[in-house]
Length: 292
Length: 280
Figure 1 (spheres, rainbow over the protein chains, first blue to last red):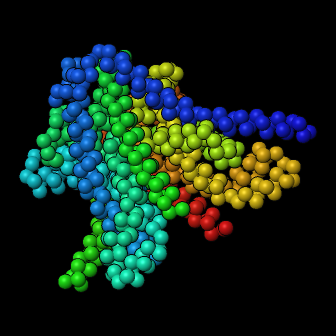
Figure 2: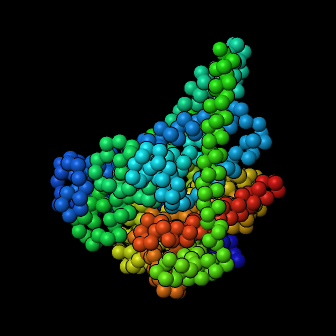
């Protein structure tokens, strides 16, 4: 093949590779456009005031976002209350205390936990956690916000442990040595020097874990009971934004107010996870800059 | 007093770690101990019978395999090409910053929103209908950011001296990428691809409205047909079936097969990574 032909092929391929890069922007733009345009169609039918007030999500008559929003946050924040201390302590153990051999065993275990499909975790919510909660609290069935929070905590744990461990590992050794040289013991060093120094990374871990929990569908769909009313506590049945979309989109006729409503709540879920994930990214970058 | 505090600290950290291990143990023990008793050769190779209360899950296994295959065909070429562009061709610029931000963003979008997008784009706009093709393409979009990220990691590990050496010999950049960089990065790319596919195989939300069905007659012979899939089968058996208690053993069996499938894919990925690392 002569040289000019080879150069032509080279230029053509460069163009092809570049267009796949542009595809990612198009994809994000497309998702945004789909959510936005369908939301606009929804708000032509239903006033935003009705959407943000009221306490009933009852398709065909009332579209009140509030119970879904409260449910979503109740379950996700509940999962963080369980997963954050557990995850950060485990990460601290892994990076500060665990002998190398134990590390070698624990890391694959955490990756295995991350690999379990969400539908299998949801199944356990029905057959294991639900009956357990029912007998502990003496309630009829254990399909409620607490069940969802426990399951989401399990699913967020690998994310939180892995990122927290990286954050703790990134704290320079000199910090620890200085603290120890000043007479602080191992624990004082860990809790007053290492963990505070790693805190941007720990916040990133929590945010990315929260992002996962907010967007998870199958687990909450299966384990939280799906009652579309504003919950009063963790033992109430709840229905998250994701579960509502999953339940109703299968049966709704296309291009109706109800159909647009599901895109509208998806648009808000998109915005919420976007803010949470970008907050996480921001802190992760701060940690990176600080230590390099 | 201080000694007591030290012991408490130690207990908290070790206890937390132990609890995490215990959680995985309980999950696997509960599913496997009850699941293995309902698994037999017949369970894997036969069709469901008697209104899904008996028989096997053969079509769901085949459906998941075919679905993952379509996902691969779509996501891998695009994902690898995008990573090659970012790592080999593009100089840091506003455009690459926007592309990278989009990729991070796409990775954080909840999977159910991909399901909606697949419904709006593939099922409705492109008129592919609820089919295994629509579902596979939807999962492909979901997998794209992960494949790009892991491929880029693999490309970054190839030393620059290798690229410079071939370019100095008068070889074009595309030929360098095709004949030197990609073959060298192959094990790393493969690891990422397999891990991504194991995630895709376990996903349920994106396929809910794009083509999955609880029961189809036979197995999907064409890309425009609906299909059965393991995760959806497990969801239906454990929540929507009329005889929920009666089909519980089938649900446990399905969960076991699904987890074994995912773990097998993960093990293959780790084996490839391990082999690659020890060779260097």
